[in-house]
Image (cartoon, rainbow, N blue to C red; front, side):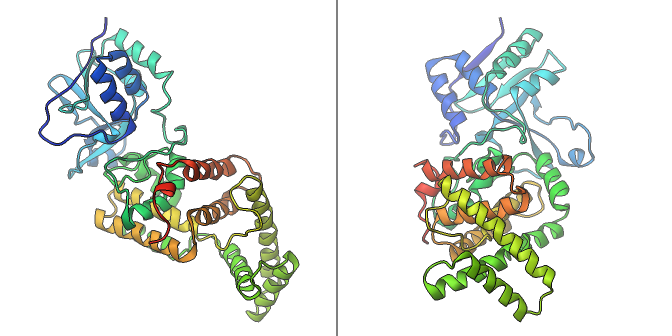
Length: 391
């Protein structure tokens, strides 16, 4: 039968489980339950290391994590500190089983920690890995990974940096990654670099800086929704209640006339107003927006993406840790200037995202904001319940 061993190790550093995966492994190791260790491992994202220049050149890069007849991987909470020229790649037990080429190699997980595992990798072992992986809930590629609210035990949990990271939590939950992790990877180096290239046209440090500035200036999203929302907010402050729909529409037309805008601009604004009203009605019905309230601004979408953009840039090595942290803290501070609570921020983020991508379908894009909103608003251990909005 296959060899699967998990055993406690004596380590020089003070060790504690960083994520739920390490916590589950620690409990299984304590019971001597190797079957449970394998089950947890099969459901976990794993990380190995390859040479950066070979990844950048394209194709499959050889792993640098091979030593003493073992291919070495780590669970996400046990990633190594950043090293020059070496980058992290994310994998899973199922992926390894499908691509394993040398049965003489064994798999060593989290070496030197209390949750070290040693697995032989003979053909029957690989079949077992795949069988156990089918039942796992984790270990998915980014586009298939389920939404989860994940917290890094050793990550920021209070203060301005934690608040800024909390402003990026909606997208972190959507992507199934830890909301408060600012480490060497967001997902993995190759995927994060590819995402920046494909979706943002960002391949250099200069590109990243320019896009980051645009997001923090709330200038990445279309201008029409924010124009309409600001007109309504101005009327609300003057009248102390939100204006009737017709009054809002008329005020926008008058504001555009004062700016000598063409008729096409007013037509575009009127369409946006109709979309905003439809989304707000649906938000109220689904509990994303309280009754008798309106959304004050949609800039949360740029700020929330900005937090994740900073994390992607750090992962892709387009900016340093200090620069990424400063951008995240700035996004959090700007969010506080525009909103009075996590709930208000979430509604603004949802509106900005849906106006941009949903096409009034209330389909997958709508689910991608409603489900994370509910997770973050309801989980007492999550950032929105544990962190005060006020500074």
